[in-house]
Image 1 (tube, rainbow, N blue to C red):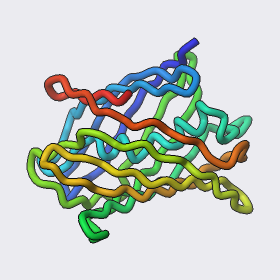
Image 2 (tube, one colour; image 1 turned 45 degrees about the vertical axis):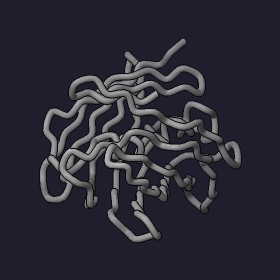
Image 3 (cartoon, one colour; image 1 turned 30 degrees about the vertical axis):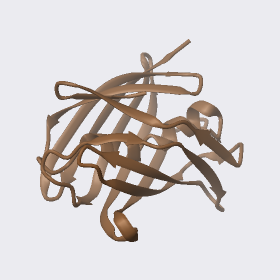
Length: 191
């Protein structure tokens, strides 16, 4: 049976306010979510932020991490964005909470830092397959992964993701399939 998701991401990107809302479903190990910007910056694609903060949902859905019993899941994700030759082109820091509601899960995320050198109108087209690794720490769990991102301008970027969770670990790693970004008008869907 699918778990319904309500998603909200807000913050600032390259000095401009951004806000994205969406809905989706979590079925077994499959995450489907569609988000649309309600306020956006011209030089920032909301799919990049979405791809950067789904690791905690996928880890939770697959049983990679065990959620805390009484609290919601709290995550802090840092994504370093590298361009050709390993040159740093940006950083994303996302703080997120995942809480249970009667209707499913509510994800509230905030862009604490988002500085990414993208051209106006440049969009993320796909995120290649990757593996999420669990790095146990004394009082939390850390997740690490790397992914290649293709853009509409033919660039390939590398995302280096680290996420700190307030959850216990269950497994060592999780292999993920490639993510395709489907666009209809101003809405992006991740499958």
